[in-house]
Image (cartoon, rainbow, N blue to C red; front, side, top):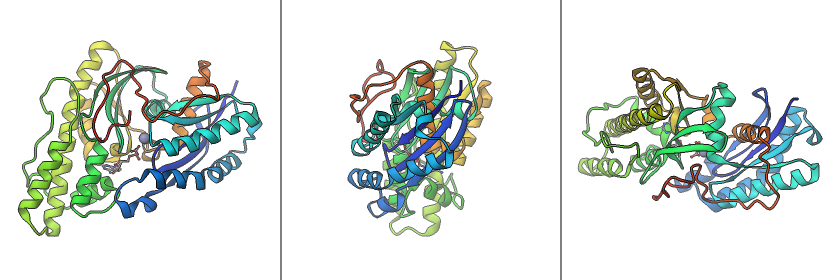
Length: 352
Ligand code: KG4
Ligand code: ZN
């Protein structure tokens, strides 16, 4: 029997809705980025984000439904990100999803945003469990063994900033623009990655946790030592920073692959997701790590790596297949770790 699910995503600064079919077909999707609203502040402002979701979500859901040519009565479930994330936005999405579920008499599916990212490679590439996931975005930086729906083991995570957050802060420091990741990547193209000796945080340490605050500080000190920055200085700093991030993450991923393979010797997939996975230097490094260890690298296309409604609809489908629906009393969760056994995370970038 064919299954159709509407997915709603409002946990950060993208308002998104999509209708997905269980044979891995995205019938329609809408993603509205709030980048322009947040640019003057150099980062996502939670109250501004919540208001923007409220303003646009109904229309985007209506457009996605119309384009999919699926009636509400034909849906098998309505999924929304119910956490972790900026709680004002999460409440907006969950409330609409519950109202639609109630009116249409359909199951409501409370999706963990991280599980949305974690399962998206099964939507795009149809890969089997288990696989190793590197999730690197503005809010998250973790390595997870994805063993099944609702079955995730966190192998490592950032002990301070998320990777994307570090890109955004360094771009701000260097006056390169917002959002920082693409700005740094553009700047780095004309830069010398070897000009500045920057640390490779955590490199060689046991385990696979990440850290970016020391690296960020080292860039700040190098910039301060130069005083007035010329364009070439900015490009060289951006390139040196990007190189340090790529090598640091590469080292952590190699450790993660080791731990993952000990538990799952026959598994072969390394998946990278989240906005930072769009970075070409990082992809190259991940490709090298995969090749060295006999793994194959899977990176969903950028539109499905960054926040989107299709991954939430897909996670809803996976849960629905297992009968994992939720009551309308489900309370949105600002924090919601995927692995309840992992030790609690700390740090500015930590939202899980
Ligand atoms: O997944 P995403 O769209 O949103 C969440 O944080 O959930 O990720 C956004 C983050 C931002 O910090 C942005 O600067 C970073 O991903 N990013 C990049 C690149 N494109 C986006 N970082 C490095 N290189 C890129 N090309
Ligand atoms: Zn995300």
